[in-house]
Image 1 (tube, one colour):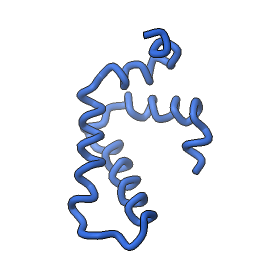
Image 2 (tube, rainbow, N blue to C red):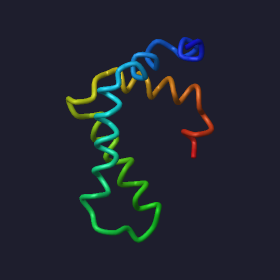
Image 3 (cartoon, rainbow, N blue to C red):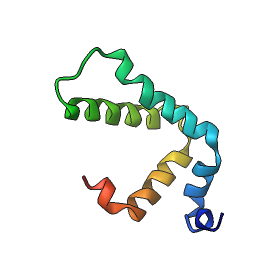
Length: 82
């Protein structure tokens, strides 16, 4: 429980709200199913990236995701700069 409170409030809200997480997981898992096969892993990565960006811009994604993403970018710079 203590590591949970070490995160900023925006991240805690996203972690605590499982419905928002499940909604994003659904978008990520359904995206590759709409296509047949992918020539490279990079093509799949780009498609998932675009699906997440589309999800962020849709009305399903609240401002909580944008705030949490910004916090994760600050906390995990080595993962977001790849």
